[in-house]
Length: 70
Picture 1 (cartoon, rainbow, N blue to C red):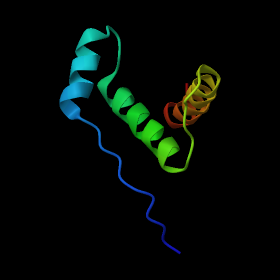
Picture 2 (picture 1 turned 45 degrees about the vertical axis):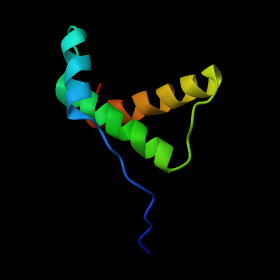
Picture 3 (picture 1 turned 135 degrees about the vertical axis):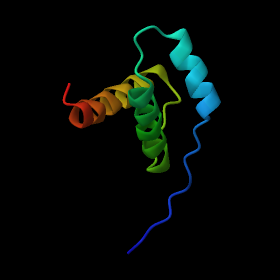
Picture 4 (picture 1 turned 60 degrees about the vertical axis):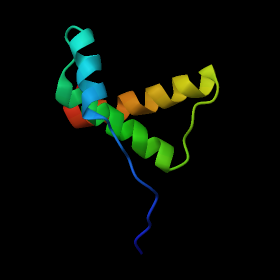
């Protein structure tokens, strides 16, 4: 069955500004990182505490490592 979880909106202008301010940040990787982060929120993973934020970042990093073969 198909499930609609919601939408992920990423401001390309905002992402471009972040990439321009961060030396060495790959634009494609950054957009994919934001997308993965959005998916985590859609499936109910949130970070309202620092501990939860660290868990989200760790999971996000593992997903990105699989995508980019880090």
